[in-house]
Length: 299
Length: 184
Image (cartoon, rainbow over all chains, first blue to last red; front, side, top):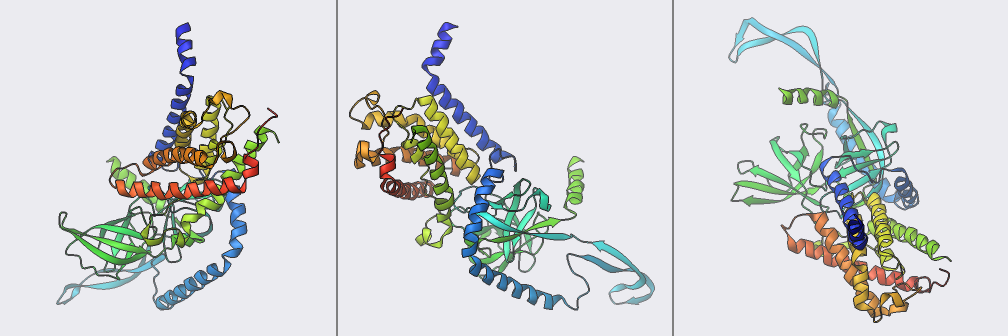
């Protein structure tokens, strides 16, 4: 026993060093494996306070740029509104679709004709609510994960796994939430985003390659899919992002012979260097959908 | 000013410089010309470099861990900075015995800095330990050896800019860091 104590006393420095390294590594692995289980994160009160105070100071100097971006977004939304006036269904709202039955009395070249019954069935599509938030800390230099801190939390209805977008592109998803703050894992991370092309072909994923905050790569697009430079790339409704949010535009098409597929280099439409305002998207039926999909996995 | 108070102030000042100024550098468009990967210079290890020579090693390790965890909380990096800091603190004594002409126990009431050591030895000392910190940190962060060149480039540019900021800090606060502590 005495020898053991002597041994510990002799190697106390190395033992303490190894203990502290082990603690650090267990914390790292926790953040890597479980999403939103960080022990230390910038959504805690003290760190959030520092970032908020700093943002209050810097905010003033960014007003001019902010004005411009809001003006651009306004214009874009107005243009969209013009397109939709006249149409009776909005994608993100309750749709009223007339119920039809097979009309056996009349036949035409295409087969059985359909006759309206007068009744209307109601289809409830995904219903989104947008919560505006201010970016109080932002990073783009990480190699695996980049985090953004925003000044909205559970008190404003923000929960884990919600999507975060800007006026003109995608940003990421909510990772850690506290009462008044939340951290976002940005698109500049090793997380995939379900993607579709301009013409509606989907089933690809977009992922970020470290090295530049401006570009992402849409991987494994089959050769028969026609893509050219300048095409837009959008999100699908399969993952947590709302459907048809612009990801960016294709700047380069790389054909990879070995896998018989194309990789598209996409320029992000979101400018991560001066991110100031974002919208957190609450999908009102996402919990119902998750429950349903979990049932499938059980069976 | 007491040695403890001085170091507490330095801790806070370095964390604030790191978090509020240096972490914002990669966000600026001029910070990576010609397709350089975005990088962050790290000045906060200077706190560990400047701790007095007579600091006992276990205390040094715990203080470094605290520093690393603080930065981790600000940068959402889990425990990567803490791991790198603890490694750096562990090898601090070895590097100092290599660089200093006399035995460490003979330097009472002093801390390693530009005045007590001179510019060249201090910058060598800073370069060795910062290199250790950066290499370890980026290996944990990137966690793959697919592109060694990319990793080396990132370590190199980050290390060089960090050293520039360490030198700048030593110039600006030369009177503060050069103090010999008699009130221990």
